[in-house]
Length: 198
Image (cartoon, rainbow, N blue to C red; front, side, top):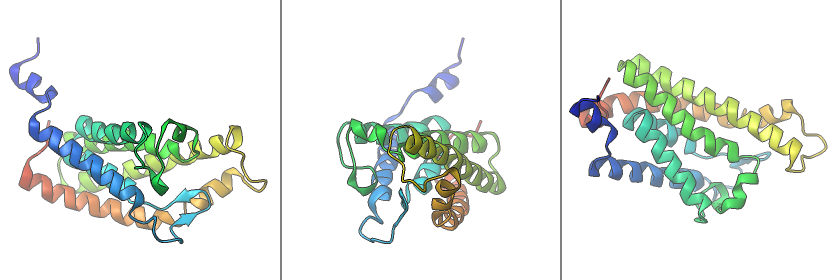
């Protein structure tokens, strides 16, 4: 039988719901904050700040609540709100080649949170952010490749190598932001104590 302390960790408090809503909103902003710049699109991949906010959600809120914040964001978009990149929305977005990144935001937040729940050092926070970023890139890029090949009418020159070449321009930005997310979340956690360390 679970103890009262264990049970309390599984219940969402009002403050938890507030933080989950906050990070879902940050995901919406991050999806389109760069949409007004025409150069923020490489091949079929829009350059956004979603990866940063997804990982930050996991680092700050923990695995379960961080993943939940990203899930809420995804559900709002699938319900029709224009909160995905390029102001996309609706259930039809599932067929978008880049929808895999939206799904992997949930996994990235969960993995980042899981790592720092087990080790709360600054190095762990940075490592968690980098590992989560790598996971997002690997799963999202592979989803995009197979989506283009199977149902999204890939260009004639499209290849697995080209899919990864599209990911090179946002890579430095996401790498730097991952390190920043780790440092920022570590300092924020010590101040706010949002996530109970296991």
